[in-house]
Length: 228
Image (cartoon, rainbow, N blue to C red; front, side, top):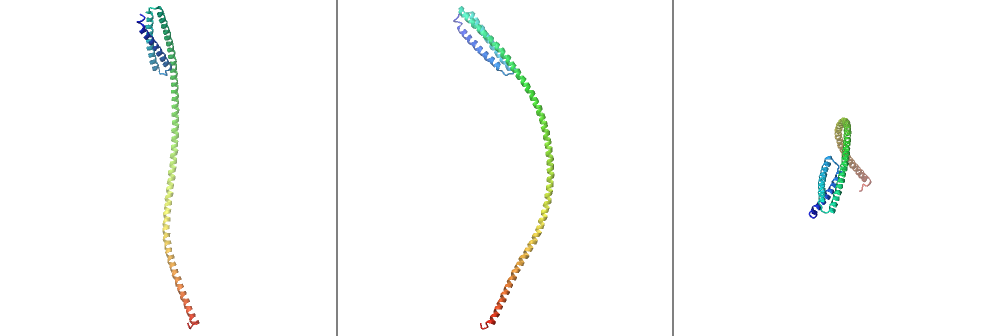
């Protein structure tokens, strides 16, 4: 009987240890769960399923212990069953504590999110007020710029009118300059003609002077040296 039950007994031990470790890991996942509640519900469903399997394996091990022929083996298995039950109760207590801690953490997180939402609403309200004030300031700035541009346009018109007057004055001066240029050219021609005539007069005077000197020299020669 004991030999026939050895294989399923060993398998039962292995599965109990496996489910125990899986439950411990799942409890830790619940303790670290950031939320939301739907995620916590899924984790709890998985833990419940693992507890169901573990409880079933412990019951199978207890039944196997009762079927043992040797009293010593029977008692040893029953003590092991009690240890597994105690461990299962410990896991259940840890599971409840993990759920409580997780729910508290989720509640606090939701409260923080709610407070943050209120802060965001206040910030949005403040932002809207700031935007309204900025829009008002921008409008005033645009109006001021518009007034400045109007003044600049008026000054530009005055400048254009001044330039137009200056242009007319320059054109008139240019006409006068052209007239004076004709006069200057005429005077230049007269001066050039006068200079030519003066040169001719100087040449005639020089020739007359030379002729006079030659005549004087000739007369002196005849009187002073008649034999020459």
